[in-house]
View: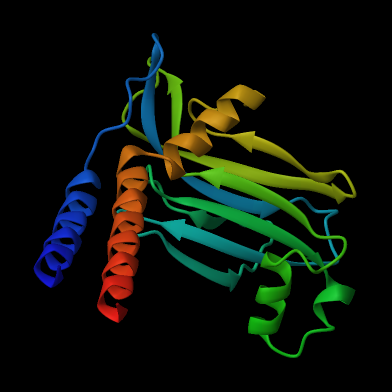
Length: 205
């Protein structure tokens, strides 16, 4: 059983690694995939917020990092392009942010949805655009023009940008997080855990 478990683990790791390079499904007719770098800046009238950025990067096992993002009238990079990259920008009221002694405490509270009045903006490092757009990389710049209890209001500029529809947003999210590589990798881990549990039960007997 030990040999079988070892073989299962090695096979699962091999499948997970190989699947990381699986290509996404073809884009719709007249569209193409591009890598998108997202920049953010503030409008002149937006004040009173601390901004926290949580980014997820690939390939392979997703790596998540959280940090403060200093925003002003000059654009700052929120996330670089890549079909497995994404980011969420949190706008935290200054009064609420001051209640936390350390950045880590603030980050944990914000990402854990424990802070009131926080508004978010989520972006993805890959998108479909009209195939007339030149090149395979673009930069989209978000200017935050206002923040209220309904969310962040933004003006967006950049080659190929179009106001997303709900269906397109779901497809982008699926492309980023539910690609075959991640699905197969997750299945491989689940199989390893299952075989490991079975081996332990038999060993106790």
